Structure formats: C-alpha cells, structure tokens
Length: 137
Image 1 (cartoon, rainbow, N blue to C red):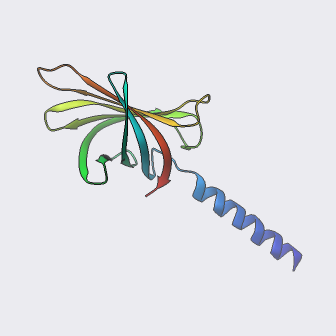
Image 2 (image 1 turned 135 degrees about the vertical axis):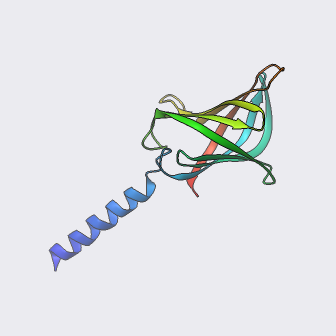
C-alpha cells in the first residue's frame, strides 16, 4: 500500500509541475499589463496580449479593442515564462510592420514587452508594457 501512495504523490507533483510550465513557443498565453510607456511617458492602461504559440498574437486594450497581428517569423529562446528568456514576433497589421518582444531578465520580477511598429511615411512608434501576470489561456 505504501508504494502505491508514493507513486500517487509523485504523479500528482509531476502533474502540478507540468501544468505550471508555460512555454511561450508552444502554449496559448495571456500576458496582462496595467502600465504602458510611450516615448518615455508612462500611462496607466489595462490590457493584454494573447499569444498562440508561434502562430498568432492579439493585442486587447481595455477589454474591448482587439488588434490581431499577422506573424511572419518568431525567434528567441524561452522554455518557461517564469524563467529568464525572450521571444520576438515579427508582425504585420494592415500596412504597418514591426516586432513584439516578450522578455524576462533575471534582475526583473516582471516581463517587459516592447512593441515597435513602422508605419509607412511616418516615424516608428515604440511602446513598452510591464506585464503583471502571465497565465494559460
């Protein structure tokens, strides 16, 4: 009976660990933020990014404005969103193209997201988001 209990406890622990590993390259994740910085000026603004592994990125502002991006390429190295890593999406929305970089560095608690869009005939725009939470979709 004791070996069966040990096996059950071990299996439960492994299952819990497996569920807590959120791989940005393969998992569908929700990255929520409450602060955005535009041209060095911080703003309180709630929103989220939803990533679908390497295939799709959505940007939702104030729970209503959905901005889907077309992903053309994904680079980086990151196996667990709780650990240090980076994933960069090359994206396009309408006539604008750019990158969305999700990054966690060891010295920072939060994930930072840099969104840079190049608009034809206009100056490129950069946004920095401080991600408060990362959860599975």
